[in-house]
Amino acid sequence: MKRLLDELVEKNRYLAKKGKVADYIPALKKANPEDLGICVIDMKEKIYTSGEYRTKFTIQSISKTISLMLAIMDNGAEEVFKRVGMEPTGDAFNSMYKLEIEGISKPLNPMINAGAIVVTSLIKGKNSKEKFARLLNLFRKITCNERLDLNEEVYISEKRTGHKNRAMAYLLKDMGVLKGDVEEVLDVYFKQCSIEVDCIDIANIGLFLANRGKVLKTGEVVTTDHIARIIKTFMVTCGMYNSSGEFAIRVGIPAKSGVAGGIMASVPHRMGIGIYGPALDEKGNSVAGYGLIEDLSRKLNLSIF
Ligand code: GLN
Image (cartoon, rainbow, N blue to C red):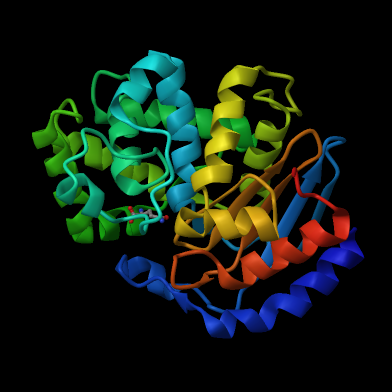
């Protein structure tokens, strides 16, 4: 396996040239576009790594999987899905087009920013500090990494420049879907996106979902099989934004990407995969990461379909 990963990382590295590091959050610009790393953890807890798998990056949209999990655990699925839908959008992750133009009553799904902001508003806690602390604690449990924390620079950078997310949140407030103080909700959202991880951490998240909500290492049942399944299903239908359909055909693995270049993937009952490659395609997915996971899926026959 190690040799295969080394081979595929080298094969796909050149793809980074076709992409671009995200710059709409100024602090993300510092990433090295040529980095490409992968970590695979199987059900026997064997860890295989290659490339720049130790490089730290912010989790960004990959956090939407675990914030959704916590919101469902706190409120029940029925309450959550009164405020956010279950359908793919076909629009960019940060689009607010459908919210306004078509006058729908709630964001289409929890994996686009509008839906994720609503989901974050549903996390319980007496203030934003406590809400984020609960979420971070959950991430630490799932990744078995007590040191997991916020990247302060990215958090501040996004909080200062997240005008579109702010506009969306106020629109959602006006629509009556988002409850509570808008700035407090946004603060938790910006913080959750700024959690700093590496490929091993996100592979552990994938493994946890592959293991149906139970942390393999500690044996702790963090969530139910049912909730883990909901998350993986959203990863299939909406996890790669408006590339999710093509990704399902070419790769066929539940996966979630983030604009810092991470891809977290979960092969049910088999493995968790964490990939990092900051150069993104036009839809916001890691371009070399996409190539790498497509090759890996073919070689190991990982498609769930
Ligand atoms: N923090 C980012 C944003 O809200 C997350 C988006 C992403 O990773 N696609 O714009």
